[in-house]
Length: 88
Image (tube, rainbow, N blue to C red):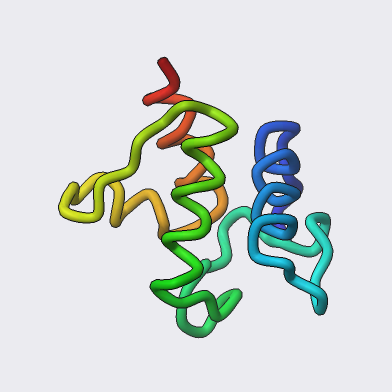
C-alpha cells in the first residue's frame, strides 16, 4: 500500500464519513487503489454522495458529464488532485 499524503488522509476521512463506511478506516484506503469495482467497491450512488461532500467541504462542483470528473473518481490520489486543481 502506498502511504497517504496529508491531503489524501483528509479526503479518505471525508469518504469514510460521507459514505458511513464501517468496514474500513481512512488509514486503510490505498491512494492508488480503485475506488469503484474491485477496489473499494463503491457505486454510482456513492459517487453522488462523494461529490456532495466535496462540494460542501471544498466548494468544488463536480459535473457527471465532465470527463475530468469521471477520471477524478479513479483513485483517492486522483480525487485529491482534481479537488486541489479545482478549489476556488
